[in-house]
Length: 302
Image 1: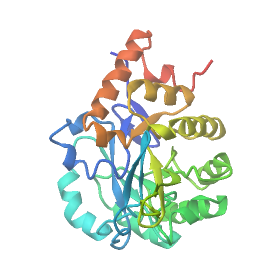
Image 2 (image 1 turned 120 degrees about the vertical axis):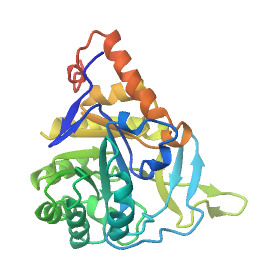
Image 3 (image 1 turned 90 degrees about the vertical axis):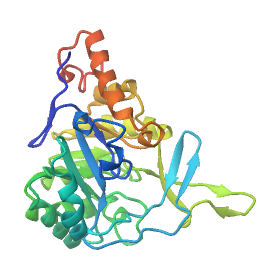
Image 4 (image 1 turned 45 degrees about the vertical axis):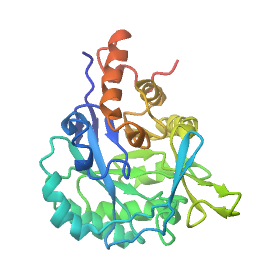
């Protein structure tokens, strides 16, 4: 048995497998399928300062080797989360991480400050990269200045481990990664979804209500892998890799590219037990290749 434990900031993880926000609910929805305590971390669905209705339906469409979504951060707001969801998840024996979004640096910071008070939440993932929300998210993540402004505001109010989720729809992801590192991010996670579109040729209309949406699934993996590789060489903080991971072999590629941990997203919809299968598969691969620890392969491309 190889050692799978890793650290991200002050966050200690028993293994490097996490679930991507928006694909695993609050964890409770998957409790009948997988032992939640065997997952390295569960990143719960996006949370905002105020309740959000999300976008109109239809807001999901299947594509070759992937899917599009424009859910739009539908949630009941941080107060509801603190009062109603948190009591149900705080005792799950893994790292419960909240994905935080907002419409302004002040919104992000206020939401993060509320979560900072919750003892059972050791980290947040700052979503500056969601491409679906008309008045926030994407606008911050596409420039160094915008990304830095959000992280700066949150860092002043939030004192636990801060992971910043980066958008792929940018000119230079390494510059943005360095900008958030300079403002105090403990880690970066990437990639969020790629902007995409699908059209119903009989109706001559887009298949999504707002026209475009975020593309995820196996089809984005080569892009995600390339960006993780670039960012891992550019920053001195841990990189969390995600985008199209659906097997242990996929995860190993991300570790070799420089990721310290990974997140599984769309694959959870196909196989709700995939997190445990990937975790066990990583261990088997390390054993087979004579590795004592996951750290033996992180960033170890020949």
